[in-house]
Length: 248
Image (cartoon, rainbow, N blue to C red; front, side):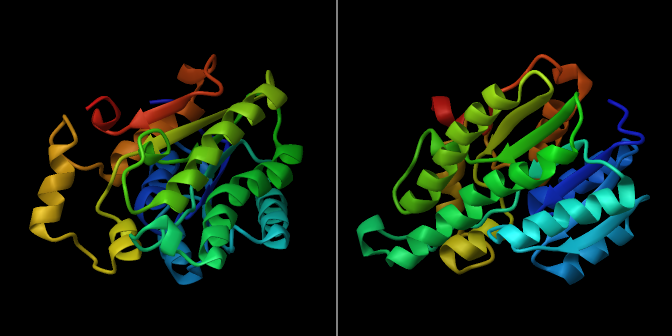
């Protein structure tokens, strides 16, 4: 495992799900972690379990709060080495044409603008060899009915990832992970239930060749790799973490 000792890693959406697993993964490799989340209590709980971490409250769609997040990281740790722009949220499942325009705009603010703002305010504090890893979705490549606005916002993350990779090379690498459905808070936000009904869960799994949904550790491992020295020649990569769903 790569050594992230003396590295500062910011993880947005770090209080739960993929972000919590990322925070724990980088911490285990020696990193100082900034656990950033709208849920400050949850972020503090995660940070409290890590060797060297602070918690920061943030609405990732807010420009001023992104600027404050970068400033907080630099104030405590003096620099920023890795940014996991992970925070995001889906909308309730339904037809796109029935969606309120404000909700459509919210999807892009939270899921796409957040990546832009993270880069805008963190990059000035990132040196050569630093890395940004965004969290998109496999639905950005292979959308299915019911989450059109969410998938469109995550699709924009792919283009933004690749454009930033070109602009920031060779000093800073920019990549993305594309998870498949996972039993995290996503289910509650998308469907209104904490766990999918058995029949629906079986239907989802039937479309994944590896025979299961993702778990947070799958996504954390992929983000960790993309930020590591082992991936030093990778930039603009949008890595499917989907158990083969995109090729099914």
